[in-house]
Image (tube, one colour):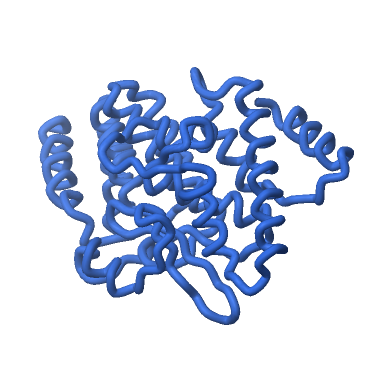
Length: 274
């Protein structure tokens, strides 16, 4: 959907007397879903309208129960009143992209997490995405305290130690994990998921484009650098593959498989130069 059309939609919402709400992340997530063969303009418009509707409903509930935390209210609404459910086995992008998560009322950790973040932004609630190896969750700050919100457990508050045990980081630590992400980094995570799905579908040119956008938005996402290297290798761009493998290793020296891939590729390049 064109950006001008999105701005007109938001302006129209304001004219109806609705409170002005920030939807920068929501618009960006809808835009990612609107790539080739993705969300059409009508679905994009509906998605933003639905976000505003849910945010307005959440705001009314918060005003009715001011003693409760915003995160608890939003989690309860998502899973009890609005009927959202988790998806933990199917990697289909329908469970990642915001428009289809809104429409199907079902999402992966990334799909539910980014929905929560978009709604939190609309409500003015401080919230950030956080990743661990193979997982995405949300962290909020309320009343001077940081809390982790686990959307695959209907918004249950989980301690940092739980994530460390369940999703261990090779080498103990890496710069992309266990910290609040910027909106651009969150978008990078979604692009990374898009790249993985396009690679599984052997749509390698689209996968390369998605992984490229992922590393541009989230330069510390070592998995995206490594995946971009793998796609470049499959496309026969061996020098570019080597560059991206090295970038992945520089960001996270403990990322599994990168050293082996780079060693094999270096040997292949050496043979080609003889």
